[in-house]
Image (cartoon, rainbow, N blue to C red; front, top):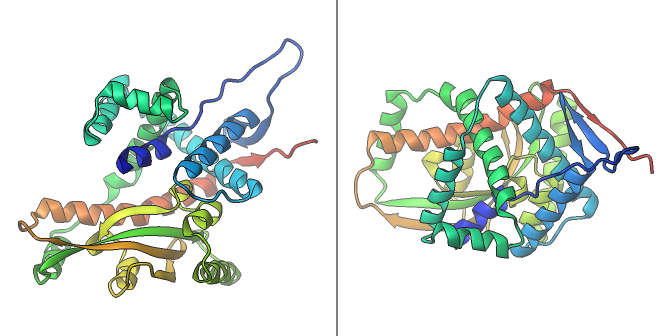
Length: 320
């Protein structure tokens, strides 16, 4: 059931209902994001849900301050994307949500009712689950249209990848985790040095036994930070070139990096490596899907950083 719980972690965040009295507001704004807001109630609920997810995944919770900052940044990025989707008239129907839930249940070999029961037993609310899944599907659709639709994979790239795979008797797959220390789109020398120093400091902690998932949750700027930076299983052809070059000679348990890419410095952990016997030759479409995944991994983060840089975000400090 690991797939189910990974999906659960990625989608369940408790929804926020603002409560107003006649003379005073019982909630407060913690951030203004373009034309929307993030409230204290919303932040508190999301933090509590992340803590529950981390506890269920047996990941040590970072400091409350670090976790709240990370969750707040994730909520800000979600609001930026949802506002852009609304402005571009991108939508997700109830049927789309139903189909996604049905696919999730089928993937885990359970019925829709069993899925609903598991969500409830995990401390979630099925209505909230649907609401947050709707937002996740909407941001995925937005990313597909804004980033994925602009990805071009040439016949030459497919042929080159096929030649590389042709000589491999086994398909080698890597289960990776990622921590990203970001850089601005046009970084100064000082920004590069600071980010590299931070990455090296974290690397030292990891090599001294620090928990990779915990540090990913508290320090990584990747969009999967709250999931411990899990990239799942990937073939070398599905990784950015810099990742593939580092992973090619790695052993299980190795921590790799810092690896410089266009969006910052990465630290990778090789959770596992498995050799999969080739049962059939990969089709051109299979290879195109591999290359698409690689380019999406590279370009989505750059796109998110540009969105964040162009957005109006104002943090509202507590008056207490």
